[in-house]
Every structure is written in C-alpha cells, then in structure tokens.
Length: 73
Image (cartoon, rainbow, N blue to C red; front, top):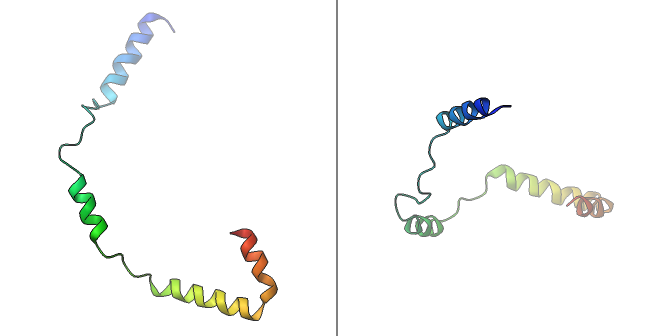
C-alpha cells in the first residue's frame, strides 16, 4: 500500500469508529455496586433441585459411577 492508500484507510477508520472519550464513567458506580451486593440472591429454580436429586439417586443406584462424575468435574 502506498501513502495515499494509508491515508484513505486512516480516514475511513476514523469515520467508522466513534471517539472513545476520556474513559471515565459519567457517575460514581460504587454506590450502585453496593446496592447490587445487598440484594438477596435469587433462589435456584426447581429444575436445579430436580437435577441434583436425580444425580443423588443415580449415585445411590450406581455407586461405581461416582469416580466417573468426579473425573469429569
């Protein structure tokens, strides 16, 4: 590429990409983060309990499969 093509490429890239600004958020994010940490976490859905129960039943019925499950964790 010659200098003319380089300049054209720089111009096209400047047009395509917006300026990044100063990189600082417009407001303080720490109070919002503290509020999110204080919120009680959601309870696991019912199908998570069903999967855990199914895994426990499977481990009781087929105890030789426990090392296989541990290997893949």
